[in-house]
Image: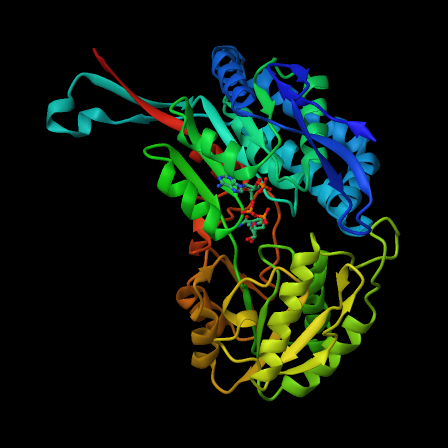
Length: 473
Ligand code: NAP
């Protein structure tokens, strides 16, 4: 079993304490993971701070070249990377390969964005006091960025932080989720091979609360970019002081099925969006609201498609659904389903655990106050309810503490535009599920789903400072 090391200042460093990483699928030990202590975090921040000068001195072409190389190396080792995902977070290979394909593209977008970092001129002479002055805004890196990442997309969501950070000339201390450190180490190895200067990327693994607090409260860290749960995100915001903070948090994404030319295709897509990676996706389809005229047919079609999903070993090519990230999650989901049944909801499909996994589960007529409706399920459960009127459907989607993305199926253009205006979310996806995401689009929620945007160009914006310059002529 491999004993891994921390990555600090371009060196692989042993820790004093180690923890066994186990496969979520069969609980077999997979690797020994170093637990960084206060001193390691201090060294990591110090080295990132030292490297800011070097990173700032790289030209846009040089930064772009490193990111391009990273994309290329991942593409050469894509199967190895996919296997890491199947091992550390039980992501079925089909989904793991899809994540790696996106990661390759994300770093490519970052390589391209590195070349587009520019400010603008300011027409100072438009102001009465600005005559004979020339003004412009230039973009500068912030310095050291702390990147704290979740377990569910450990390669691609890390790419969404490292890619733009380096594109803009920053340095990074990365804290991967405790269940998915191997992808963090692999990412560091790839950046090392791609020629990133020593110290520009540091990877510290270990206890989230301990390392997180040290990073979030340190004055040398200029920004915290966090993806994860609401409680942790709120804690970070409270402790971060004047640092820049972006929070990409959870959701209970809703989709309206008003009408569609091909209802079967919509049902198939909703099944995909509800059960991909066992629903452990921030924009997983959790609440579906179906026009009452289509409801029975829609449920029948969803059930047929859910029945085609294969539950099994994440390392098997056929598997669609595998283990949840830990056994506690299976218990929680089971108790939420019981609560729903006790309140009169019906399990139309699934509802049972299968070893460390959970069946894809379709619940109908689930009330809005149930845990499966108002909280983030983060498991393979979808709640499908009928509605009578369009206004009711819009209201039902908005009746949530979250607001990441929403989907709307309609053939009526006026209703589509109406939904765009009225839905309280960061992204409205017309004629598709809210789980639609490609890596150059702006992505981020409103309400409890967070603050700030990702999508390379938009993160670069968050990760740079605008410096104004005025020349008196
Ligand atoms: P999590 O428990 O909040 O953990 C996320 C990261 O925060 C991990 O690296 C964790 O480390 C660390 N952490 C824990 N306590 C901390 C603290 N006190 N200070 C600083 N960092 C701390 O989330 P998760 O279970 O890994 O991921 C699932 C959540 O992420 C869901 O809510 C999902 O919706 C959300 N998510 C959102 C997006 C988006 O883009 N909006 C994308 C993906 C996931 P440890 O693992 O060591 O505890």
